Every structure is written in C-alpha cells, then in structure tokens.
Image (cartoon, rainbow, N blue to C red; front, side, top):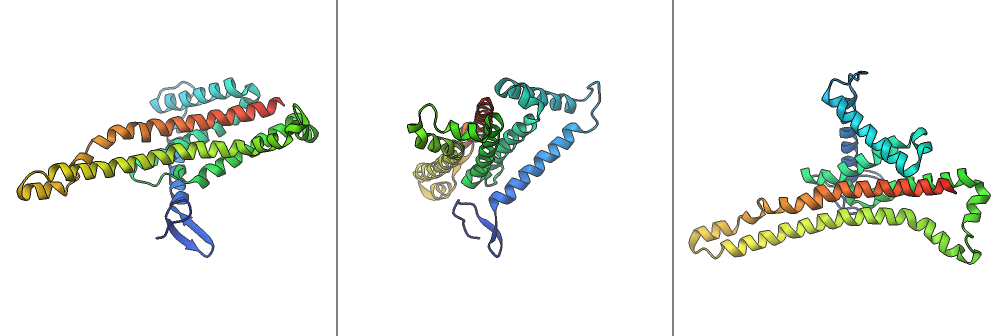
Length: 247
C-alpha cells in the first residue's frame, strides 16, 4: 500500500481512480449513522414508550432549536435541520473513529474541503436568492468599490478557513497523540533499563508507560476536541448561511 498526498493509504486503485482509507472509512461511518437512525426510529409511536424514541426525539428537538435560534424559522421550515444534524454527526463520528484504530477521515484535508465547498454553494445560493444576481454582484462593491479585491478574497476565504480550522485541530491532535506514545515508549525504555540484569533488559523492551496514560490525553484530543470541532463547523455553517440569506 502506498500513501496519497493527504497521508491516507491507498487501498485499491482502478486506473486513475484511487480508493483510500478516507473513502472507505467515511462509508463505514455513514453506514453506522444509517444503522443508528434505523435503530432509533424503528417502531415509533404517538405516545413515547421506549428509550430509543426518547433519544431520537431529544436529538430532533435540540437540532431544531439550534437551527431555529441561529438561522431563523424559515430555514427550519425548508429542512436545514437534517442537513446540520448530518454534518455534525458525520464530523463527530469521523473524528472519533480514530479511537477504534481507524484512520479518521477528518484527518484528510480533502474531506473538509468537500464539506466546505458544499457550504460555500449553499451560501452563494442564499445570496442569489436574497438579492438576485445584481444584488450578489453589488455586494462585492460594498461598502465602497475600492474594497472589491478584499471582498472577493473574503468570499473564497470562508470555505477555506472552515476546512483548515477543522483539519488543523483534528490533525494536530493525532500528531500530538503519536508524539506522546513515542515519548512514553522512550521514557519506559530509559526507566526500566536501569534495573540491573535480565529483568531490566526485558522490561526495557515493554512500553509499560503507554498503558493508561495516553487515555487521559485521549479524553481531550479524541473525544472532547472531536465533538467540539463538529459543533463549531456546524455553527459556522449556520451563521454564514443565515447571514447570506439576510442580504
């Protein structure tokens, strides 16, 4: 297996088409999400009697409230809540997949650029919808025409900043975790090699310090940071699309 430009291993290749870990793991995460949705929404009843339905209703209510508060009731009515919930769930689970030994798709910049491009299209669509083609073009010359170059840069910098912010936080967490493992292995070797005789030689080859200690750092870098970055990405998505619709 070889590496592509983003660090994900190429698992299969059919001519110019490369199937990387990013693609495979993303589909695995999507399959898990579909399975969870089917599990939580099976046998729904008017009067809730199951814990599954309570969880499903709780998620729907929270996402609807978040979309309504940050984007407005119009976006809630036209169905943006499922989109925001899908992005948040996909982002969080893709990042958390590293905790089970998978290559996190969010560690691949192409994944985040694809999501950001989708958000950029929605932003542009809502700007056209709010002000029409002339209003959209006019926006580049506001508040004064001399700011046209800066407004163009700002327009295309929006999706790039979203992608690099998410990617940077997830990728840096993976790098730091790897450095911690390497440092603990070296420290374990240096410490236990001080024991004289064969016992020291054997224990010095076992990375004993790697047991337990990385889990403490994993709580932040893998669990908290993954959920936080998913939330931030969705909040930025709602803020940019909501602002675009205001004209």
